[in-house]
Amino acid sequence: MIELNDITYGYDGTALLSGISLSLSPGSFHFLTGPSGAGKTTLLRLCYLDLTPSRGSITVFGVPAARLGRNDVAKLRRRVGVVHQDCGFLDHMSVRENIAMPLATSGLDPAQHAAEIDELLAWVGLTDRAEARPAELSGGERQRAALARALILSPDVVLADEPTGNVDWEMSLRLLTLLVELNRMGKAVLIATHDMNLIRAAKSQVQARVLRLRRGQLDMAGADL
Ligand SMILES: Nc1ncnc2c1ncn2[C@@H]1O[C@H](COP(=O)(O)OP(=O)(O)OP(=O)(O)O)[C@@H](O)[C@H]1O
Image 1 (cartoon, rainbow, N blue to C red):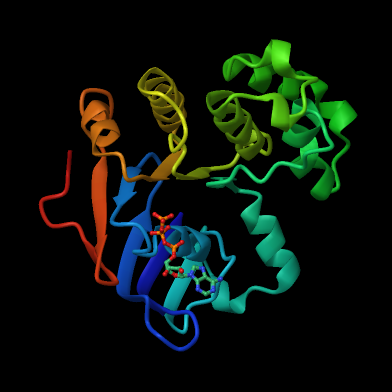
Image 2: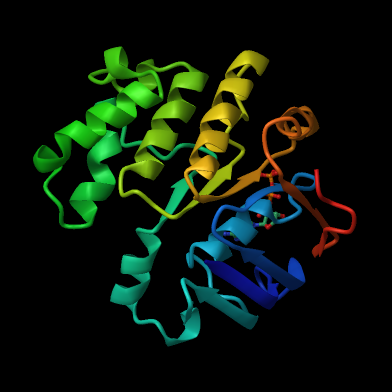
């Protein structure tokens, strides 16, 4: 569904990532790991076409990204749910309104999708926090709300950037279980994480591939869990 072919990318003229090839196929589950600053977020941004590589090509849902106009990019991005590292909530809006936001920005009426919002709130266990402001949520609640928002447009691919960054171990496992459940529904899942314990915990639940970013390159030798 998303393919990166021999990608090079850097900020300010220096190559941060080089020779990166990656294929996220339907039902695949990947962890992306590597030291802080290795380029995990950057790689995710390339996957959802938020950045354009300086070399190499990206194909999304069978379409070469280089051929896409801005409207096409916006349309295809709806099929990719992103859980951002900082969650990226609008603080003056309730949890429910934040989850509904991608509907509104896609020209859909949130009122017509109230049942889906309720269903997602229940699935992530936040029904009773729906009217809270993001600032009132715990770390784990924020991450689950961010996951619900990433799913509101029923994406085919879910990219999660450090989804367990600020939560305790029990909550990390709960988030992992939700992501595994999505994968079982056929979605491609990619999780960027520092947390090797999380990767080990996934072993009994899902057949995952571990990608390690090292010195700008992707190492996946012997990487299957
Ligand atoms: N918009 C930007 N402009 C310039 N440099 C950037 C920008 N975004 C990231 N960088 C730099 O690129 C490098 C990789 O950043 P990135 O956020 O992709 O790494 P990461 O592996 O996700 O890090 P972490 O694990 O700490 O979140 C870092 O050195 C960062 O400072």
